[in-house]
Length: 102
Picture 1: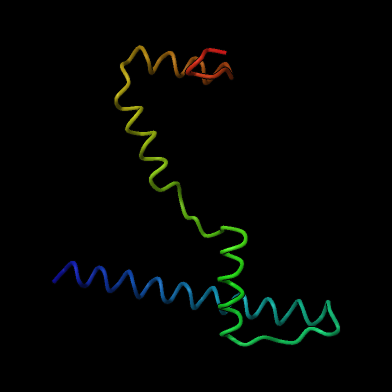
Picture 2: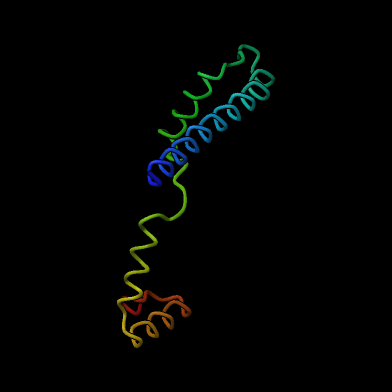
């Protein structure tokens, strides 16, 4: 039961976030674009959501934080011996490639 509540809460949060982003896009569009371009018209909420989805597809935004990429590096770090960690730190601070030493 507790898992269902958590999932429902996360789903609700996602829906609210998408609605808020759509509203922000609509307000910015209606404020900026008609003032800049004489032929441009104001958009409604549905068009703002479409514009938000299009920008996501074209520009790949909303990636969030490092996700799985950061966890992979943390696992690599934890599997290193103390000597490997020290060699990595030294190479990192010197600006060379930690793997090749160049």
